[in-house]
Image (tube, rainbow, N blue to C red; front, side, top):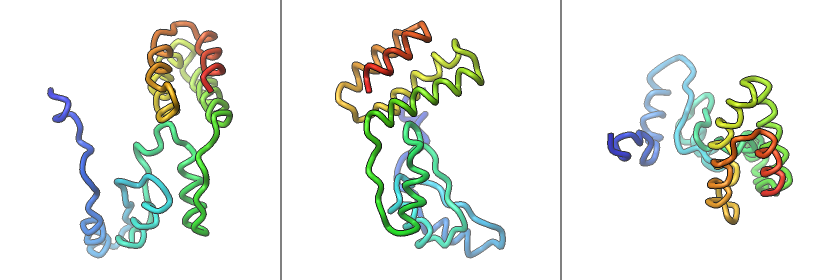
Length: 149
């Protein structure tokens, strides 16, 4: 299958369709699509009247998005992105939790994609991904995470 055929997520969400669904049904409606920050979350609520929102791909490597959206919806405040120290702590905690749940071998492999998301936009992110993807030892991965952030 060609890459473009496999990418089902493209274009902007149609807020009018969500609004029409909300107006047509008596059950709660959850708005989803293109919610990447507080401003887009607020727009979803205001333009559709939806009862709740769902965050998808924008949370990959960005678990802070939830608190950021809540804060923005409460008082319009935009929270700054976390610094590298916070990102490092989060990656290490994520790795630890995944290891506890799945075991070290699975965690090591699964964290590759998560680390790519966490480090997106950092200087040298491509090189970081390349290095991380070569590591086959859990402790070496932990040490590399401590180095990069």
